[in-house]
Image (cartoon, rainbow, N blue to C red; front, side):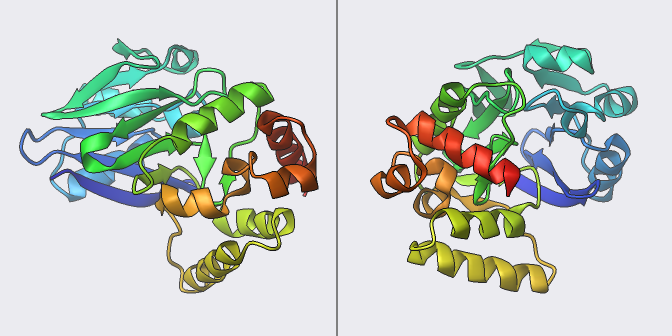
Length: 251
């Protein structure tokens, strides 16, 4: 069984180490702070052998050099990460990468950036989605276009509902406030928002989340819902998504 270690990093990032006890391999999922990753791995007796980057932003690939220098880890990343780091294994949609005997499928989830990818490990029912989707939210559309981003979210929506989504930031409390504004009649959302408030009051993380829960409550994954389309406008889901994303940016 794969082991996942999650820890706080920078101001609101989460770091993830994915460890295969059989092979001894460990993948760093993104690298907000290379020194923190090395310390967290060392505390568990793990050595980072791979780095899996979801996109090029410095809070996701900025620690690559520090980790590579210390461990010689192989960098697995989309081409855009060349802005910050050398890449040993260039990956794109449809590719497969391995950690020991485990396989991760690369999914194009561009929109936040134009080369953003996710790593889906179907046998473990997990996906590392970076900034493409958050608990009750999604990343800002810095580089992409609405239809591109919606198509990316649709690929995430197509994963099995029991898939655990490891997203990269603790934004959920703020996302919940907007979600309730966007979809105030959603009873499941209200229950979820109450649970989020209680978790944060206890100092607990709200990540990871489960896709099935997000499908019922996350307005950005529900832009094809007739009620949301009627409320926010748009003749096609990507147009409703664009309206929701713009509203969130201004919220």
